[in-house]
Image 1: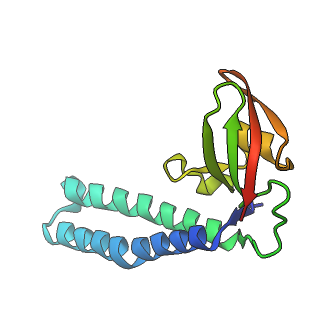
Image 2: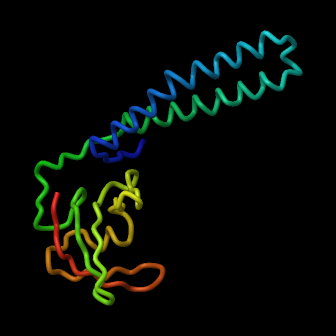
Image 3: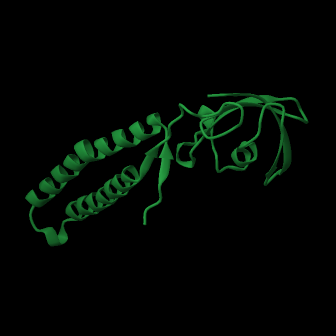
Length: 157
């Protein structure tokens, strides 16, 4: 049984674009490489042919996995998300209670996490610690580096 993954519209589009690239650009390129290697003669001692066939196998495996992920993807509907508590797709401004530093994160599904874009997984220690909290609540989050306390300053969609 395949795992169901949740995506935003942007995340699902990105996956579909990647699959399109693999099928429409990379697959024909590898087929051309195999054709060129076949034209060079004896396949039993043809390293180019072996390498192209191996690349084709790896590509087909990627395509198959991505097809499966997309088939089991579910789109997150953010229209009914309650902004009074932290949930998936919430944009949360938090303040470190110890040093007063503020930071804003968007909680996303695990497969869409991107720390550079300030998108953290709802499955991460910080994500788990923030879920269900309201503005003014203190979230005590256990991390490998120790326990941290964050005050929820603002929640939006």
